[in-house]
Length: 350
Image 1 (spheres, rainbow, N blue to C red):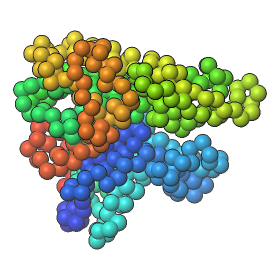
Image 2 (tube, rainbow, N blue to C red):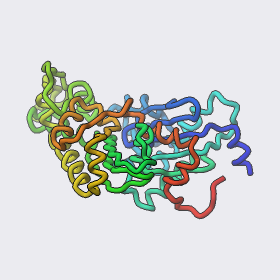
Image 3 (cartoon, helix red, strand yellow):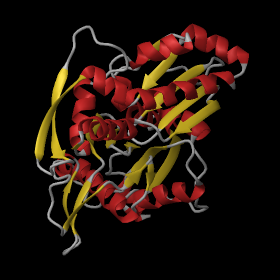
Image 4 (cartoon, one colour):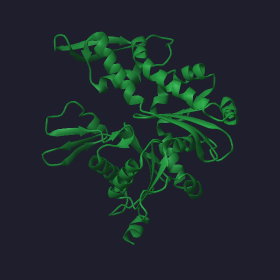
């Protein structure tokens, strides 16, 4: 009863709970929070020191008693308590400007395709404990397709490749259902690790993930650039143990990323091979839609189009497609009822 009362004064929220970033979409306002999924905790007091961007700035720079935690691994909850605290922080932040004393929002949240029932339960419990009165789970590729404004309810083949931080989700969607799919743990995070390993092997330089990610975002590409680019990478020389800086060019970063890009392309091909021919015909005509942060890698659409011989489009604002998809479902109860995953709890929340 109290949940329903407080729910009237709470904002309904759509969440893209990602390995690298968490995005919150508020009904009528759009994406209001887009912050890294990182929490800094003081182990002496068990208090949260920072969340999001400020916590990311602390990565690799904290004293022993302050721990920076990424509570999600490969798109699923790996640290339940920290995930709960992070979500509560974001939910409270949204309601700061309202008159709600105890926020009790209804929340729609995207989850990876290969999630187990135990992992689904962990997400549901974390969201409920963070203050939601009701939580509804949907598959991330469905949310991405809705956010990219694809006609998922029609009898046509829609192919979505959602390259996030921890997972790459490849799905062919028709008539509000996923026909064929692949879920990979090769995504943005793995690409960053590829660069870290490459600088170690080639330059004997140990760099942090933050430095590698910066190189990936600034000069990373899947195809040759018109103009060569380079970036300074600083870290520790593995031979001397002293600080060292090297200049790395875009060709070397591209070489480091090749392994991950190849895996993604091979799995797109495998998904197409197992798709019914009528849907493949639609995809050949309509093309593949790229979503997620990985879609921003320069030339990735070109190399996928070349290897698959299918047109490839990048969704508008690919970083927010899943969040926008969950947000659209807040206002479409009929569609939500058709695509929502069954709850792991028999008892209704509201």
